[in-house]
Structure formats: structure tokens, C-alpha cells
Image (cartoon, rainbow, N blue to C red; front, side):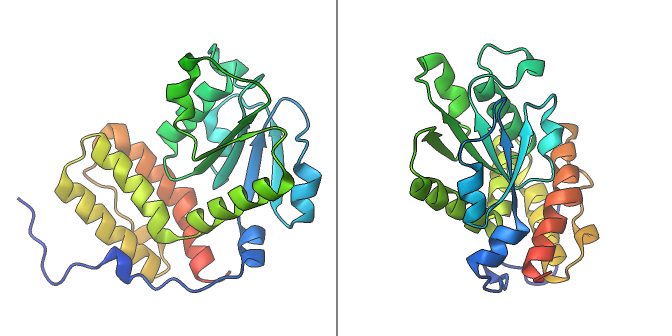
Length: 219
């Protein structure tokens, strides 16, 4: 049995300082997974986005430090040996890093076998999508990942969907709020979580939570 002493902290009581989009763009790097040069890279950099082209990747852990990922659907994820290529890669990224903002893109049409994996993306764009639409999609993503509440809600949904007991999620949420308020990632306590989600929480605390705290602190 779990007892909560005192008044619980409210997630919506978190004080989130306003930041200009220019600052958010500087502080949130966007990784691109594509076996070819990313055609929109120069234009998006001219719009002050921090674009990092990774090429293809061998492991989803390579994207751990990036809050936003743009992933091609064709020609990537070869090391994971899936016929779904980038769609499978997106599904694996969502599984291990549920708080990240994922954007899929391609110049091809896909059969229904791709649909379930592609539902893991937050946005899907065609390669010939206008620069204006790319800017809008990425600014939306940056706004979401820069907001501690949004990042936590994504993580919380994953824990609940995977059967973590409600009282454990509540304790974790309270420690997350404390960590953000006190600007101290070590306040985020993952003890007692089931092994299948513990590593997700540890990874979040190690990288994403540190980034969130730096963002709200304006550093």
C-alpha cells in the first residue's frame, strides 16, 4: 500500500518560462536519418533549425541525445534487417524513446503493411512538401519537446500502456515535477519500476530530463 503525505504536486502547476522560438531552435537539435543527403537541410538551417544529418544508423541508441528525429522510410534501418525499413526504425525509436517527436518522410507510397509502424510518427511529410510546411511541422515539434508537461505526458502514457501500476506512475510523476522545479535530474527516482520500463526511465533521466531542465532554466 502506498501513502502520500501532504498535498500532491500538480503537473499543470509547473512554472514554464516563455522562450522565443529562436532560442528553442538553438537549444533543440534535430537529427535526420537518411541514406542520402537531406534535401531540405540547407533551407531549414537558414530558418535557424539545428539540423544534424546522421545518415543511416545501426542502433536506435544513436538518436538518444536528439529530441526530434526526421526519418526517411526508404533505404534506412538496414542494420535492423526489416522489410519495413524506416517504418520499423520509427517503431523501435518510439518503443525505446517514447518522449521524442518523430517525423517520417518519403517520396513513395506504401502498402498497408507499413501503416501500424508509421502510426508511431507524430507527423508524416512527403519529400516534396514545401519548406513552409516543414518549418511549421518542426516548430510544432520543438514547442512540444521544450514543454516539460508534454514530454512527461508522452512518457506517462507509455508506462500506463505497459501495465505499470498507477501508484508507481504517480510516484514517478511527483519526482519528475520535483526534478524540474529544483533543476536537479537526480530527484527523478526510478526505483521499483518493472525491468521492461526501468531502462526507458533511466535513459529519460540521463539525457532528456537534463535537456528539459537546461531549457526551463534558460541555459
